[in-house]
Image (cartoon, rainbow, N blue to C red; front, side, top):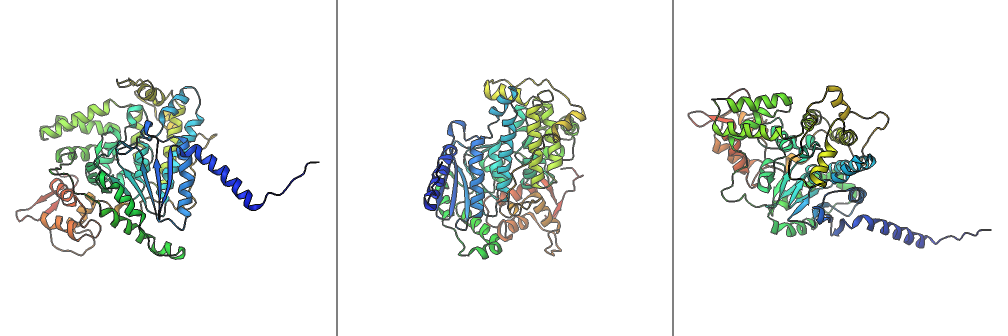
Length: 502
């Protein structure tokens, strides 16, 4: 007869903790978790792969974030990397997805994308301030880690981009939801967001900050001090009071980061000139079809009324787009049209569906082959796209659930899905729409008189409670006014209508 003995409760706890620790070590070699006073620090530590996310890293981070969210003793979460200043996170491990997909194994794609986008959703749903330190390469999956949190810190080392179109994929990780909402210039209909994600153009740290994809700009040599400062923050509230004062904690974090903000570099100029921003606004409206984008670029390039700079930029942009996968361009367009006006959970679920379907359907897209060409075979030449066009039914296949294998995200327990971020706009530079509302008097301040450029800049630089004293706000507002306003003979500003000559 077998005999059973009861393990003392204390001993059982030790056994379970030991097993948990052993399991965690398997995943923690590439992600480090650290307690620093009231801060919880998540450090990506896969430097040889530029901190590209894989399934194991997502599996380690996801439950840890859930625990941080429920904790009574931590106030902020910091995302950083051991690889800075070279890389924050270079993307997701799509090379492994492509390798296995070419072998007929699609389960890894399903697992990886489910975990990656669930991680993005969890970050978006966090009710505690999350600060992403984008010190270095921040691309693809790295953008996904940062874009959904209200505090996105750029440095002089930041290189921000969504380069997925070069491998026959699409701008994923929720950027077709997030980036149209945070970009500051180039139109108020997500035009710069669509341009960046379709061309894969790279922004440096200062440009990322001015463009709105970063909320703050801090020099690399102050990052360590910033993180130490964040670890000191607390509100002296018990658990029952925290929910009521949640917004105050976000304000406290913002004030702490702004202690380390640095001015824009001397003689700084935004990456895109006024002429180039005009082209982006005219061509890249989210409502435009792909055919309309190309037609608009052709029209600008051929127009005698346009400046040489605008004509040259339009022609160059068309050339860049022509080198991308035609299927990827169509998928990107559809995602912008769907996701920019839906809620965060629906948008990331759509990304999951499309990512898995593209992994499964090498007959309809070239994601696996193009990714192998670039990332596994290390070819320097562009992949020669063979699939030039899709029927509507084929496009629908890539965008629709497989009824026999439905996909869903791991939903955070505290998620109340939303169509607008609750805090993003409160802590970044103003957008064109903000400047337009002030100049046209539509900001509900009751002002009845027109304003000059000097008065408008002063308002955002010294009086507006959200943008007051933010580095670069005077530069950005001046750029917006110079592009979008026509002063009368007395210097009072008139906002140009969308139909007027930009």
